[in-house]
Image 1: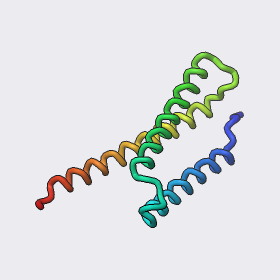
Image 2: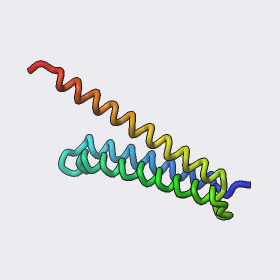
Image 3: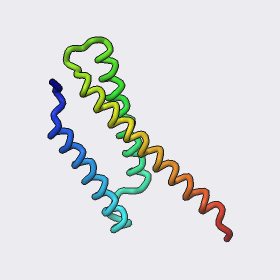
Length: 107
């Protein structure tokens, strides 16, 4: 069977969702007390990069035949990396669209 602990995975997903929701509330409610937009965006990019690196490392270890790496674990990590990259791409697209809208406004 799989070594992936579903409860642990769900807990991590809930933590990430709570952190995303809390940071959005904190950012919108306070200009001075919350983190800067640049910092939040940079942290998000670094997290996506970490997820991709971890997935790549696990996949390479599985390909080399490491007995401690399970196929299900590799697939879950690859999917997490894919979803996070897709989400980051959508955020970039929305930011670019907002920038273009602002630049097209008449002053």
